[in-house]
Image (cartoon, rainbow, N blue to C red):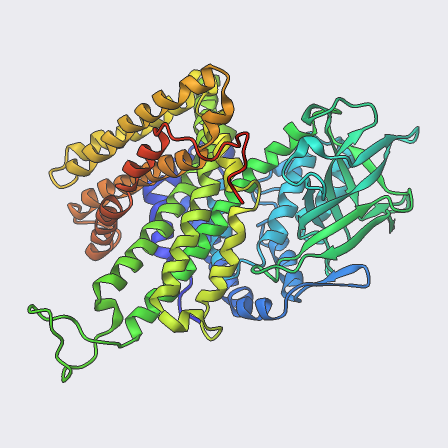
Length: 604
């Protein structure tokens, strides 16, 4: 196991110095917290992760969750992490005081769980989904539902899930058929099946509170007819004891990675005795679920970013310890009598490590950016402020979920390559990180779905206002960088890419205006990649601007090499990654159409 799975110094730098966590603490909601107390909270999570998560990372992969006798058997650390997450405020952290929470900034909470993700990505999903489920009940549920379910969820005694996907529908939620039949006793009879339910069952929770999307009889077709229900595995009797609620764990899916994080198939109402309680208004279930889904999409990006970071630390350690070959001399020859070089001295290995560093640290900044927007929205003091940051968050949510997942997988792949043949062997952790991160591009809507959301919904939102606001944020950094002699050429490059994005949209928009949405969205994934590279270029330029300022500060917080490394990584990103936008733009503006199905089938 590598000695270091997370770069805590960089995490704090991006959270405190780049995204200015301290500025959020001036807001009334967070007035009971200060930077020192939140820093202690983050440090305590690091110590907890060192002790209770990281040592079990490989073991949980080697002894995966499995289904037996109607339940799922998971590693015993699931119990420890669930209860400790309740005790330490990880589940309840962002909730209001009156709901049993600590009113910790969402940003600080994401930093804490990021550390847990990096330590052992098989475990944090259990408390995270419980937190998200409880959030839905608090936001939309009746007082009775809150009193019955939320306290035990926030303490980690009960688990929580979100149940959307069905066998016949997949990602198409308009096709779900799980049925809710009203009764005269205040509850609904639930009948149906849900698949791919993360953390859906295990032996260490007394109960599971499932948040289930279902269709009330007679409801409109499509997503407009979907309602949200609390469906516990065990329902609460009048005397407070629990009884079986006709929720059956049919199976656990055996996965390529994240094998310690169970993924279940649940059946509801096989004996016609499954009871569910409506959350909020009927037929508003999908809108309500989106409250949780935005948080869940940030969580997916956070988890992928953390895996990329852990893989980078592992491959960096290996590169600094592994001697192999010798550096080329000026004449292009090698001297076999010389001592072997550490592989970190070879340019191609350095290229792969810099790619990993640029993706891992850039993704972390992206996650904290979204988290900051989330905190500003929740504490906004004016309608204008709330609308602005809501639009900004909506604009970047698909990127936050997708870039760390897709680029993160590429990053881990390069880390595996740094190890050479050893990277493919179970003796080293890179192969596990490679398997674990792959599901991130599938969680909470695949890359294709996120890309269509970005180009199809977010770009045209309010006649392009969200994109305008994002461009304005990027331009502020470009203007700051333009004042620096060393950085101004990178600022100019990023400005050109913003202009090119307008040209790309100028080519695509007419298809949408003519009602040809299939053509408009056919290459949405390419646009996702294009805009993601631009956004990451912005975040790296932002770090470089700050680093240059701090290098001129005699009271700098971090070492000179720390800041210089940020500037160097920015330069790498602009040399190797940003130019990819040119080929993407060329493809996006091509008149060649080869993926839309025509009269004849060419995929044979």
